[in-house]
Image (cartoon, rainbow, N blue to C red; front, side, top):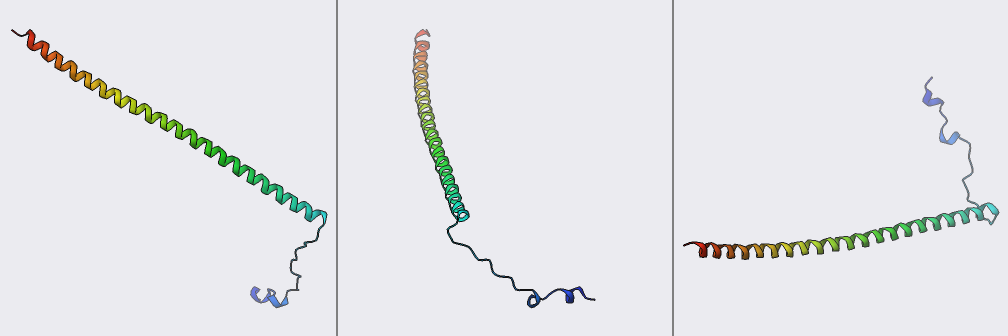
Length: 102
């Protein structure tokens, strides 16, 4: 016996009715609609809240980066001033050593 010949063919299967959706207004359908609406509202609230948090975090990061950039610029200016003072001190030291030589 071949097991393939014993399998029912599509024409041999009994006809089942198609799934039909019920759109009448009854308590179950109204409850489903309310549940869907509440779920969508909750999801929308979560999404907007998280987007708000991302916006707050990005603005805080921008403020922090701006402060760090300003501090680095201040350090660069200070380093330039220190280097200028070192050059002046070196020039004055050279003058003093020339004067002190007999």
